Length: 267
Image (cartoon, rainbow, N blue to C red; front, side, top):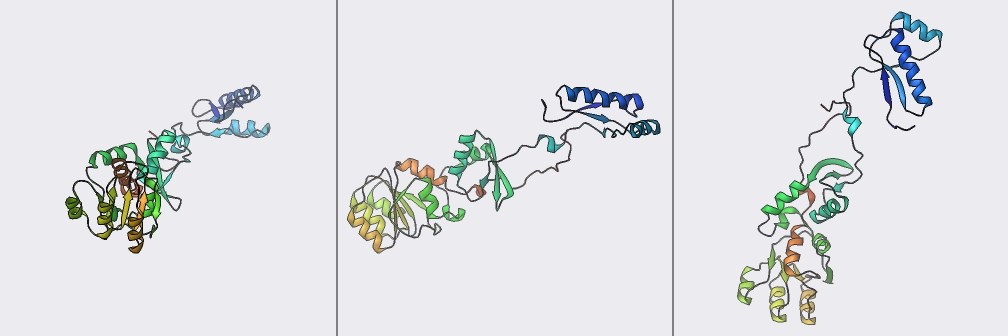
């Protein structure tokens, strides 16, 4: 068949025998010619037409009450979805690779929301500071993933982040003042003494950016405190931006979905 969806040939409303016979004959001719054409009717069959169809052992044409498109007629088979726990970075990659403007969000194979390019854009413009990862329920393995990190000193990668993300910039005194216990500290090309100061202040994780060198003294101190050290190939600015993208999709998705039944009208 040339057309996958059927084409209906219909006579007038309240059809008589001529109308029904014409629809059947025309549909038969088009089918022989390779078209997917189906005979139909727009109303009840009268007694005369019923007798004729039964006499010639022909089925009644399909009753079509209206031709308004239904939701099921335009529904797309969406095979690309994202999990609610996936990071915003993964969401962005899925959208970019597949040229999508929106992606359904699922949990246990059940639709729970939708996220759009607009949702990502709004978050980007509101993103003035480092995100509160503790509030978002982010784990250290999520951070390792988004910054393409390599674990230098292992720790509890499945643990949830409790502190804030800090960038070790400025003087040593300034760094000491801003860093708190359980924080995550991003540090670039700094002297070993500065890095050791960060480790000794009880931080939870040290991220060395730009594939910076980590001395044996720092590694030994971190191991004694069971503290995670991660090395990332990206510079400090890029790492900070990527860490903001480890927030789960569930934080920005739209939960109040407008839904339609398959047989609902599209008008």
